[in-house]
Amino acid sequence: MDAARVLIVDDDRSVRDMLAEYLRAHGYAVAQAADGAAMRAELERDPPDLVLLDIRLPGEDGLTLARYLRERYDVGIIMVTAAGEVIDRVIGLEIGADDYVAKPFDPRELLARLKSVLRRLQAQAPAGAQPAPASRRVAVGRCSLDLAAHRLFDASGAEVHITSMEYELLRVFVENPNRVLSRDRLLTLTRNRAWEPFDRSIDIRIARLRRKIEAEPANPVAIRTVRGAGYMFVPPPAG
Image (tube, helix red, strand yellow):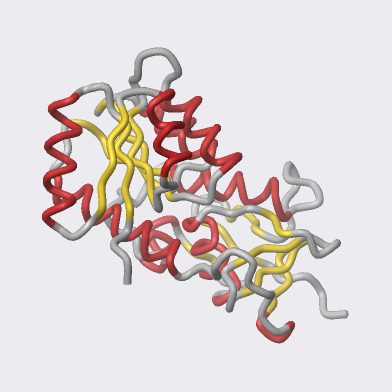
């Protein structure tokens, strides 16, 4: 099996070199880019499996580049933010980043997050694969989730893009229908215990999911908020 390919996008040469050496020592193929232009060149040359993307970049910032990536490539995205810049993390997750890590970070934490995102991505069906049998599909709002293929489809059968973490949240919800799940429980069930229990990332991702699966995202009926307790998935009526 080929080594997963990671593209490090950071304008600090010393940071890029340190991360590249560390990740290569753990078996990953690594490429580097200092800015958006170099990132695009690497994408054209050899698309990566995951992009480690610094937010503070010269010219186009990391948030702009994350939006570009999410619209055009099926890759994992881990944002690198300054320790106190919560708003950057919020915007990054709203754009569709899979995870984030704050500077200064321990390379071991970064490696754990990278492995987690890649595991979820590798579990998804390869490009061009046929949908799994209908028995593996579960209705979620106005869409259907294919649990075998890790894909979401709208009522017309068109695929709706979801990130690996959004899939994990949907999987947990459909496996626990009509049960209130706290943020802490959701973090545990999606195997993301590295996050804090009250991290807004859960709320942000659920808001993104609602825009995709709810007929009226402002008045959700599939993923409901239970005030003071968490969230609950309510399957649509049979028939």
